[in-house]
Length: 589
Image (cartoon, rainbow, N blue to C red; front, side):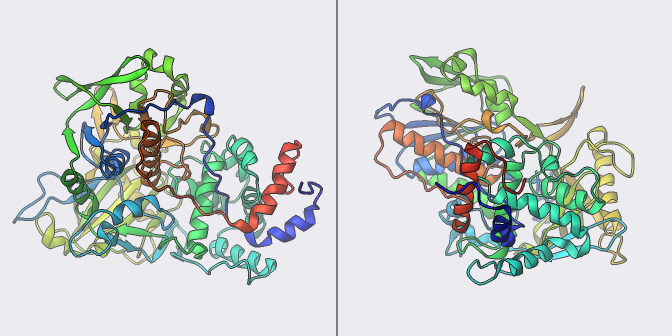
């Protein structure tokens, strides 16, 4: 057994190189008591309820393994990942201006999505749709009334076998100093907390860190504005679209390590940290994907949403479907994959369903928040940065990307009426803080007020004399149609799941206790532990793998990848595991 009495000084020395990363715990083990029995059946019909990222992935993996697949989708294929034409903006044979729910971002540590992309043919691309990913080479942090901070999309590689601990700590501290925006004594707090997370055992991460918020972990009260806005808020609101006061440290730490190892080039299999598509999402990815699935035999039933599940003999025997006009039909299949968002899936958990799998009721405790995009179509190219921009200190936690610089086609020739030459796509991550123009939250504003307020907040952050943006350049703007106004006020049809502290226990596994019901969505327990396209893709692969096993299929299950965890830290994690079992705190606590 490891020596739990190892000195604090020796551990501090061993950890000096590792202060700027966070650990990646594996997915929590499934509860064997809830695992459904094998159902060896010759039935090959699968109903996939939802055609978003998870549903398309499940259909892809199943059709390749000889199943008969029907996808039922109420709105549009691709879900929140799709691009959305701005209606009535096309002229002269061009396409409508390209709107979207929010810009697409493909970190280099994504592995499931790239694997899927390589299997989708695209004219002229040896690696299919994957070759439509292009790199962003810089990241800009714009701060009102202060100099901007810029960073390349990669930093010096980290090699455990070359650098001594002191040199490593100094290099990582410099990388996180952000040009002096963080006082050194506060940066040391941040480093120590992340070192603690990085070297914590799985047991400690899944208990203590899971039940503590990011703001609590970083002791944000009383710290400087730079510390609170960059290390506490920006890492959550702009990168994981969550509130530091509610998101679990476990989730933030998992993503933190992934970004750090990716930026440092530590993992050879990881790609460029900041990747985007070379065209609107549907053109570059979703449409070719849907065509491939049709060619392989997948049937798409558009306009139909699952309303209820029918049960007999402990299994799902059918799904009652409804369209927008209120017409109903029955979907029959041998296997069912529920691939809709969590807030819609819980509507299917009737008393009869919960009697067979009581754990599904815990999904009612999962929480969502708003992260919605708005696009500004501009008269001139406006490359604010060669990558993403975070508007630190903006009340609505804005991030943006100037897209035309990454798209292969001539924007003005392909879209709109020829007057727009760029698309500035902005994500709004905070809908509950008053803005600077109207003094209202985004939820209290009209669509026009949202457009003006977002622009004002960006302009305030970019007041550096460069004239980065000019409101006279705006041809038009497009707000995600998932946002609309009704009798009771503003409504968001596409909220985002957030991993609040303590919520891991409420997230289900891909296979339910009902033998022929499987779950695919970013709320399912996965290694990536965040509501992302990657998490949705990974969950669908897990659902298909479980379906194959339950059906007794000889087909090879879909590949599942794990985020990198440095093997050099395993001895230290074992030490902490011993301390955790003994009821002792982390050595750095």
